[in-house]
Amino acid sequence: MSDIAEPVIPVWQHLESSARAVLTLYGFSEVRTPVVERRSVFERSLGTTTDVVQKEMYQFEDGGGRELVLRPEGTAGVIRYLAGLGQDGAGARVYYLGPMFRRERPQAGRKRQFHQFGAEAAGEPSPYADAEMIALQVHLLQAWGLTNFIIKLNTRGMPVDRVAVQDGIRNLLEARRGELCEDCQRRMDANVLRVMDCKNPGCRAIVAELPPMTSFMSEEARAYFEEVKRILERLDLQVTVDPNLVRGLDYYQHTVWEIAHPGLGAQDAVGAGGRYAIELGGREVPGVGFAMGMERIIMALEAEQKLPAPATQPLVWLVSVERSLLDAHLQLVQSLRLRGVKTRIDLGGRSIKAQMRAAAKAGARWVILHGADEDAKGTFQLKDMESGEQREVDMPGLLEVVRPALVS
Image (cartoon, rainbow, N blue to C red):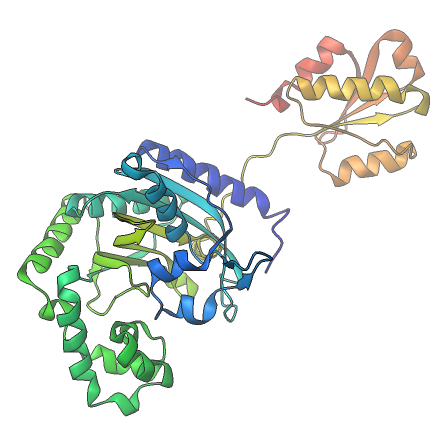
């Protein structure tokens, strides 16, 4: 797990504020769910056969005997919240941002604590809603500055197709069971579609020879998928159909997608999404959503050399020439701060030279020097740290000079 601080934290804040602005355009509001949830929330939504539930969750029992976990992903908690709203949750459009936790080997852009930005739109299956969610995700990526990403698209079909798809895939793989990795041999019986999501090169080569899953699906499911593709084309969104894309969670149905970025190497996914139906709290909540790993987004921006440099407020630093005036100096800096000026002061009583070094190290744009002479005249010595020019100003003159530092 990593600490996130200067100098990278302004980049995170910029991406978060940009994301909130885009989601607002689409009518989404923010929801903040607990970091700790009951284990059952994820067992019922993700499925007991998924790797996340079987071996990747941080889980513990509290003093009351409750089985709890650190949330491994964002959708299940959001759906639990929406299910609790009853009919008020129908048609809800929400987004979330925060840390997720998985007890797995750290990889590029995803340590055991990682951060996701995601959105969920509750509602019955609709090709238009699926296409709109993909368009929203693309809009967000472009707002962040990314362009070199690839949208991989597929369908999981309707719930009634699930048995036919699983039986068809299992029958084709049975003859080559011995060539699969140990995990996939187990998945053959528990949930054969998890074989399609395996990252083992040998398993991937075998899966690549399989016919598309749509060949085992109903005509209605194939028509739904064709409609999604048609709408995306109307929206000028280029997608690549990946017939073996299944996503790793059991709650998906109909449209699924993944967004990859070639600048990330082997682990190239920056985000993914799909349509789902999740039963929690005695209610089934249908919807469509996506999630993106913020660490992976930053890596992709670095690969495209488009990492944003957020604007910084110019800093004003007050140097106390005389310790006896510290009361007045603290009052002054507080007055400037209340006017929206980013202002610092050294309260430790250090020498003028040490204070000037601190101001330069902090990147101060201007330094205010104030001693007994200036106090008697009601003036200040104002030094421009870029040009080195220093001049005497009164309070109106001081405010006029530092006006560019005011918060807009």
